[in-house]
Image 1 (cartoon, rainbow over the protein chains, first blue to last red):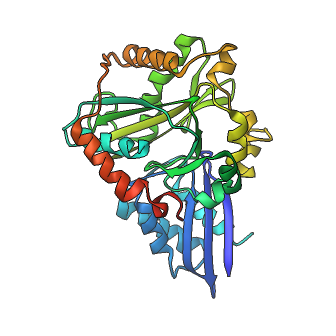
Image 2: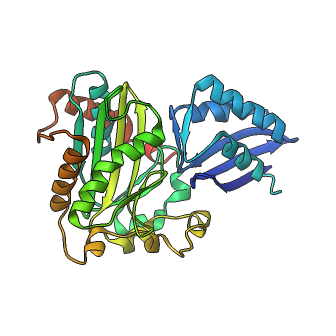
Image 3: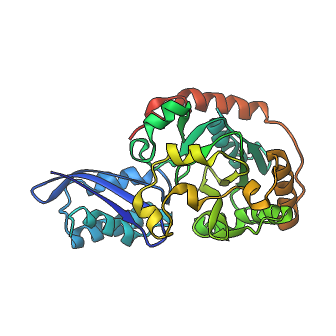
Length: 93
Length: 239
């Protein structure tokens, strides 16, 4: 099932999620938008890490936190919580 | 080629092969999208074809901007650890390295203010956006100042999502941006604005800006980056 959300981050930037979900799990995801994240290549790592993750808050929050710790990524206009909320917004609830 | 030069300079500065650099440049009709953006979602492709507008992706994040000959782009490349940006925080870099442009615009009589995350505004309207990165052992910041740009084309070629406009209580991108010309109420050239920004940078940061040309190595690297990256559809239009 294709799911999407355009989420306005607390810092004013837009996080756009386009994902494919199967049996409650993320199969593939593309995260785009006008935010800042360095190193820039790390967004691909986050997308990869999200594959096969249940589309549930607890699992996604753990994974996003692990991503930030592993990559030492730094954002501007977007926080880890914004990525979590943007992904959950694809559920439409 | 301009975006390739934009990447070549901080790489060379980071390697210690080029000095701290401020670059000024402009493009003819081009949309420059941020590195995380989807061209398909952000750009009105039909309007681009109609108006002869090209689409290019830059290596920094942030939002899409429309470039024409009425824009003035500036880019600051510093080696990591430079006294102006000691703390390696991207938000602080945006603020600190926008201050020179803000000062320059004020010298012209524009009531410019830095607005986080990355804008320079006049009475709530954006007159310049900025983007940047910390990589290749360098700190890089670039901005796009609307001097006398054609805002009608800008409104056509960019798809600004409703969510972006709603919090600013305006109905279109055209109404939330302004130009230096409109703020001053007179015609002004990009050259005049460039000179003011140079003056702003010098007084704000206590530096002296000397004019120069790209080094051979910078040109060579830019040509390589153009061939391998910035001229390619897979970089510019995907995802």
